[in-house]
Length: 151
Image (tube, rainbow, N blue to C red):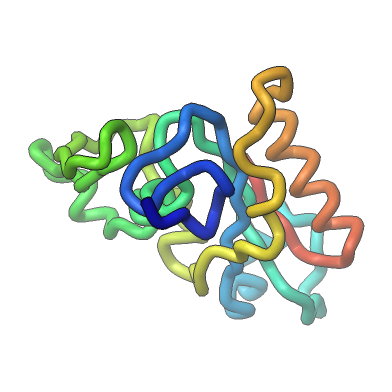
């Protein structure tokens, strides 16, 4: 089975059993948004790269990225679903709800997944809390001078 770019154990269709962290590069226009500047801790004059950092336990990184990118009106329909192959490699329609809603900055400003920043970390060892790994990756990127928002 071909491997996913985001994890050394995941296939391109089926997710491995581990949790994953990910980083999504955002367009520089996101720095014009005062809410992003506040959560990322940057000033109006920031000119570096911008990222959203997240973690997922149930879905592959690529599937989670698709959820983030779904248009708001698509997700708000009562019967709105997305196609997921994470469980067994077979496409299955999953309903949207609060726990798989996308981030507004990713929806508006995503450039794509920044595999070079996170693929070596995945899958996370079972003893590592994914929320803590997400915060650690975000902090590491901030220390390198990037603007980072994470949940």
